[in-house]
Length: 142
Image 1: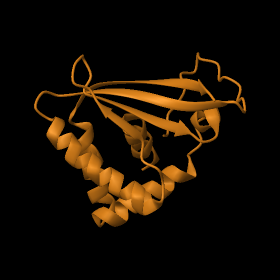
Image 2: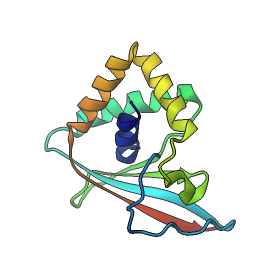
Image 3: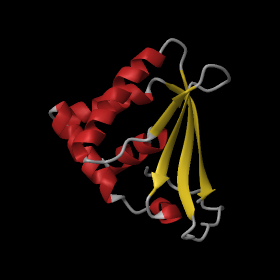
């Protein structure tokens, strides 16, 4: 189950990302806001399906009391969507520990869908729509 959570959050939001081992973790600074930025390219003809599934994920976030990511839909270029997540604890959120917010979100999704199998199926259906994705960590000075 945790691997599935880790798979979704980087994609949507994907909030649970693993840093590349060769990349050093930047120090946390009080005057910096950290985010992950994920760009997603869906398979041709699947954007409307992805939007429907994303609405279900957002509903689970709302029920769990967890902010949804900021989503932008591209009108041109290679990618269809960009998703940004604020890392509440900075780069420490990427250190391979499971974020309690991710566990809370997963429980809300399971409750919403009626069972863990249904939630897994929903995630699988969403993942099948993705042609490619890329995630980066960024910082914004206050």
